[in-house]
Image (cartoon, rainbow over all chains, first blue to last red; front, side, top):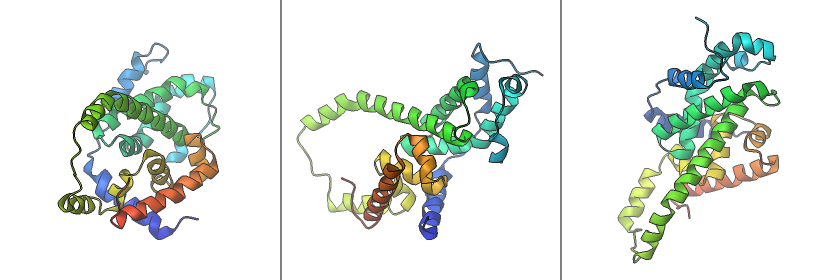
Length: 46
Length: 185
């Protein structure tokens, strides 16, 4: 069983003191470009 | 949201829904994967590059994924391995630098001012966690932040459940020690 206080403290601190410094910007387009470059990957049907 | 991603499909299904399914996986886990990678490499730009590679590996191997684990566990396992490969490469590259530093006369860097600063910098539990060795850091992040069970962590990191429990226990103790003003040695 997880200690709930410990769990919340670690989770909240990682969010507040570490992950909040990162401004998320999706790289989905870059990933899809790379995926499409792979010969075995079928191209998306538009 | 994760429930939509955790599904099984046959090769025929994949032919029809491949791109949409892959995009759904990216949409669901992208931010979490970058954050998870950051806890290893501590550099957001490197973490983003690693997450791209991890997703590409998922795409390449999606047909051979037999859903013995969740997509999330599989994706995070790939990410962890990519991060460890990166850290190994960095370690090799910087080995020569360490040798130069070690060959210079030692200086006492642990002056009272430095110790005070270090303690102030490590005041938050999240930051202290990131200063732990990888083997403790990864299990603590997966257990407390990603809310995975010890069994799922064991599968993800390919170590025994008992090893996961022992690393969790030691990791917690080291974390407590760091927070009480001690230093990791």
